[in-house]
Length: 197
Image (tube, rainbow, N blue to C red):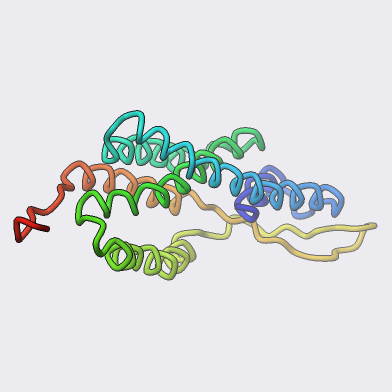
């Protein structure tokens, strides 16, 4: 999130080849703050989505709402280039992400019972681990360098910063949320093999 914000904020300066070090410090500080703000949204989402799910009485419908929100946020994130809009977009993603982590253990218990919920959730959660490896690799393949800015302090170049275009990565993530939305609509608890399951 921090580097995405830095690229958003410096993109307007990309036409030139230099950026004042003081302004860059302000941009990087705002980027670092965004990470903390997203973490707060994530924590609140764990509680709020559990409550929303209980109120709706249907965890699958709750997931559908979450996937719609995430898809919208991801597909429009490249346009949310002011800091308040960026925080809203990434905050919504963090808010839903916290909810996913809260709802999936309950869904596993709903679908397969509580007897082996730990092992079953562990199997499901391996998908998260695979995504943790595959996602950053894919993102690195999808982004492209838009420009390199020199960071100037007292008239001298002190560092260089690459402005990255994340648009394709955001679109792929949004499309994957839409795919998950349709897949979850067909999710059903398996029929028990034995009467006492």
